[in-house]
Length: 445
Image 1: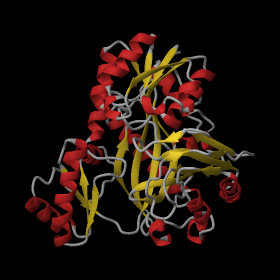
Image 2 (image 1 turned 45 degrees about the horizontal axis):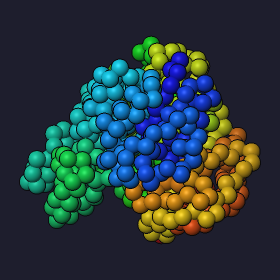
Image 3 (image 1 turned 180 degrees about the vertical axis):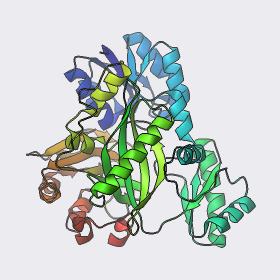
């Protein structure tokens, strides 16, 4: 097993990775920016290295600073967490070229799945369902208009190099397409350095369902069930649960088989997620994208399958067999995750500040993965995620009741936070029924 691990991330995910590393007897090394010096993940690491100022480009996305920290501390491996450099193929290559172990998929797989158009074409060739859309970038507005006419409105205009719900717009007709195309292209060039645009069929009433895969050291790819991710604001997830209340055993079998084919098509190793859109009226699903990293919502899969995904990532990276039998994967119970963000619960606008009160809920089936505690300052430099509240139980009904009690007990004062939104959601009949889609938050507002 790996003996020393540098975690190239921050907040709750750095803390969560450090927790598993220390349980396994692995020396855990944190890197941190000046803004994060007082956060829990820094104190909990065996060693911590300051790598730069608050600006992520000068710290958490600074390859040279991270590699220098790895060298100075004698780190054997690097885990990128999610975000920042986690899906940067060049960083993965540089880590391995430096003689370090990269805890993630190979750079070639990251590259293959990082461009949405290339990924769509690869998936279609592998027999994974894809939504009607362009097979090449829409190089100019006229090309986009012609493509949309062939696909049929409404269409989604997407940044080919985008991710995380960013760089997307919906066009219901040609006039809207002309506006959205220019907007998405400009955003993509600014944010991703790549203005390539994809035109794809848009489904107004759809569910967002994803499958957790794990590429093993022996070359096999296994699927660890699905997660429902349809509670979203601005195309970004707020709640995830597993199993999905929309997925029947027959549909699950199709989902998992498609996800395995997707992983096999790119020789996938380590943890990844195949994201899909599900049309609940027909039970047809379509490939959306593949996240070549550990997902924010991985804890719900951990509960349902009884495994530690970070441990499995480390084992794959070390060339070891998994802790479970790949031929006897059996899901049990239900799990739900709520993303506690530093944002107001109505418009979801960021609200940084000093944490004056922080009281986490406890009890059976309650887990909190937090990045902050009382006295910490939530700065505007990073993602607004404060913590993840994860609830597990034997049934969905039991989980929903436990979740209500846990949300009521979670006390945060100082920064704005969205805890009141979850109180509202857990009483919402559409959500409680399980028959919801990606429009649920907009209908609640």
